[in-house]
Length: 355
Ligand SMILES: *[C@@H]1O[C@H](CO)[C@@H](O)[C@H](O)[C@H]1NC(C)=O
Ligand SMILES: *[C@@H]1O[C@H](CO)[C@@H](O)[C@H](O)[C@H]1NC(C)=O
Image (cartoon, rainbow, N blue to C red; front, side, top):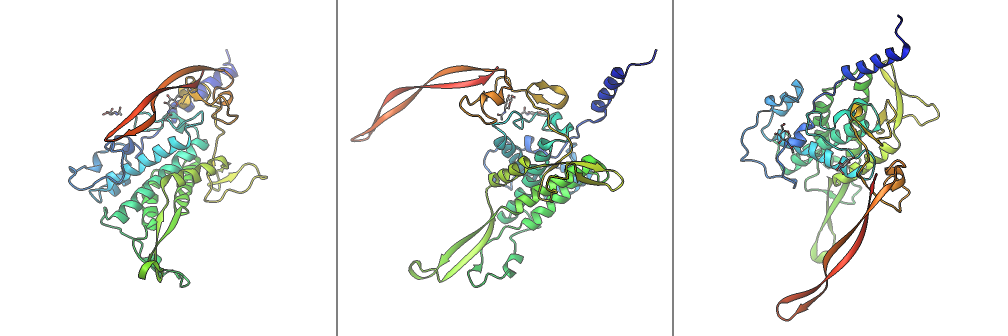
């Protein structure tokens, strides 16, 4: 009996998911690094950590990480920043950048080469560049410091360079060496990841401020000293989120080993843009094959027509409402001396959740 086409498809589907296992990643350092919530952490007096014991690092990454005692902390800090910012930028979307306590961190969503995957690679590459750059400026790393080359740039007599300009060149170079080492230039996945890694670094470089301080008698600004500093990481997360919204669908040209846009009517993606190979699923329902948790039980906004609104978030399944009473202090008065008297007020709030 000849096998039916349908059976063949089933087998093929099975094999695709079987063969494409998700790789462990350095991002895991962001989950296991000590649970300090405040960067910058205080370095020194940390027990020796041997990066070569981290099974989730590639050989070259172990080597780079071992170069300095503090590096594993800085890399962990970068990964953690990236994860937190991804969850911040996507908190109101169906896919909300959930992480799992596994060495692939973001789970099976990475098996699909969608814009979500593109964002993850870009923000993580940016995270490590940011963390290394900051650590250099703080003096936590031995091989780098402030950017001295920037001082050669002409300022048209407007100000003088001074202070510590942050060295994104070193941070970017480290990110590239460390992050890109996992990828193959000959595969479509590798090329896509490399492209998005670089877009993350370009976004980081574009988010710098010129900060200045005036010196001079009684508030005059006869000498103006300026230096360059990275904006907060949220600015980078937002810049990449805009790139996510405008990401380009590309395909792999095998004999040229290149990615090319599919739709010639669309603008050609630059190195600053995000690219992806597959359209995203809707993430409405739970699907273990691509790590979708579904939107059941997610909070939604009844009055919004956007992605956070109950209509789109709940995929038409409807929602339920919970009325909560919140008790809080109100009408507080200062009573001489020294007491504050408050009334207790009850506020009623309505919260909506997807069915
Ligand atoms: C994650 O898993 C590791 C090892 O399986 C465990 O040691 C750690 O406590 C877990 N972390 C969390 C936050 O669950
Ligand atoms: C993301 O959504 C899942 C359910 O889809 C939920 O369990 C989780 O708490 C959400 N995570 C964040 C960071 O909001």
